[in-house]
Image 1: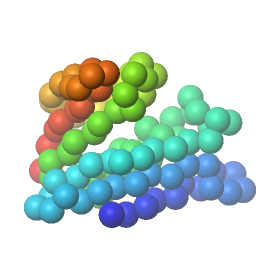
Image 2 (image 1 turned 120 degrees about the vertical axis):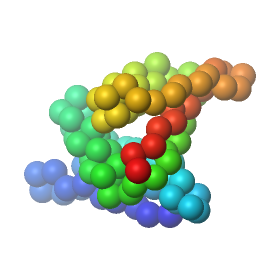
Image 3 (image 1 turned 30 degrees about the vertical axis):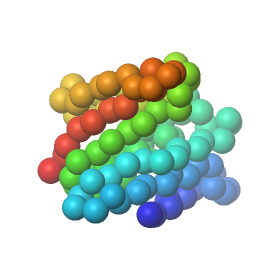
Image 4 (image 1 turned 135 degrees about the vertical axis):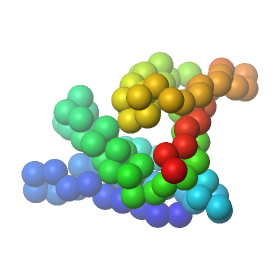
Length: 103
């Protein structure tokens, strides 16, 4: 597992936790952006850098029942993969799970 901290202005404004589930299978387990930096592409830019650092198979599980989180991930992954991803809704709360490969 790896933690990445993103600097903005005079301090840290965001962090991302990446899990490596062996054999180049990755998952982002947490993305946090301070409220003052939301909507300014801080999360999107950081996530894309992480994707470029780790080549393999990715699973993104969104926050259950959060349309805002699902929209963020669909837009970010769609842009990064040029639409080459799969999405499923699973479990009691129809949690969105996105799958793609960037090998």
